[in-house]
Length: 175
Image (tube, rainbow, N blue to C red; front, side):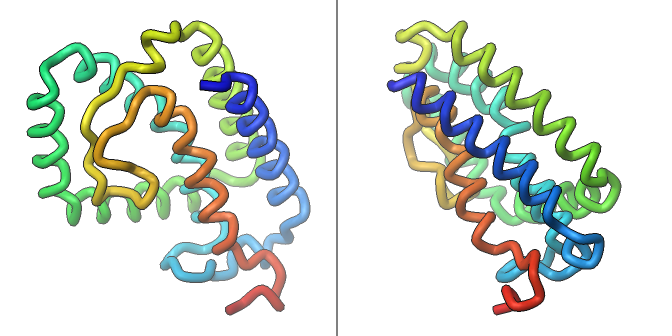
């Protein structure tokens, strides 16, 4: 894994997140995004959420990566079976977080989580980054059936870039 490339991805996302918030008007943030049921403000929170969940996803890899592969395969199957409740919780969490946390709160939280991810990535061993587990691939288009910890560190920026294209921060961006 190219750690420097991941550090650069994290910084690119941080800069883009700040720029998106700085350039958006209050009306832009209240506008519905493209292809989701969220406003732009709620979708921006959802993009932040992709980074916030890395600690939990990493802990799962650290645990299940030490167990026989069948254990994480069974766990992923159970989670895949619960995709519908996950989708509801994912929607409501992003709706609530995006509604309650304004631009200053979101950018400050984004900075804290990116700083923590940089620190944690630097502390990972090569063996840690190579450890993997089976994932609930139905939960997110960027989850694959098997992911290493290195894959998990790359996930949030893939998620961020995908959802960035759904933002409608200028009226002519309505699709």
